[in-house]
Image (cartoon, rainbow, N blue to C red; front, side, top):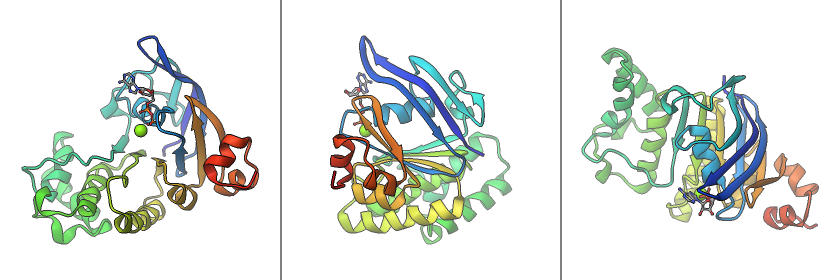
Length: 238
Ligand code: ADP
Ligand code: MG
């Protein structure tokens, strides 16, 4: 399970307001894409959901349980960033096993879970390698594996493909589309790539200046943009 409810979420850094009251409902298993210009608050909102930063106002719930004050590790939320931050001295296997061991899982269960996840992500032949022996795309897949292996309720991606070259981005986009189907877990995906947004999303959230401009399916936004900003951003002919 992994439905999310955001009610009146605000965020200030010092005296500077960055999010002005975000209301959103994200259903279990839904793939939601956040788009909007640089600086509009997408990463901040993800960090609040993950618990990496404190909410200034409003309420955040998962499956109806308020989690404003729940520690990040207890939220069942995993986040993948554009910089992979793998542990350089550990093998791919150890990178994926580390969090499970910390959480107290038995060695046999860790082994089973890591191998299953590696299979899903086609990482099995790479399990003994160190991060420096991997390509950019492979590293990003390990970063995704390290998050998936813990069976999160909600998966957050912050521009995960933006450091990859164009060909790899296309390949990874297909892999993420496959994961969406295979895992069926709730995913929130931030991108400024229109093609990624339109092809991956069940629902797109268009943000601007710390507010939500419109929420809808890719087709809704394309055919019925709420305003010129959305039309311009989605590229529809309003
Ligand atoms: P996006 O991901 O949409 O590009 P961000 O969420 O990173 O936008 O940033 C939104 C705004 O908040 C920007 O104006 C940014 O400068 C500001 N901001 C983000 N993080 C901090 C921080 N830790 N301290 C102060 N200002 C911040
Ligand atoms: Mg960002």
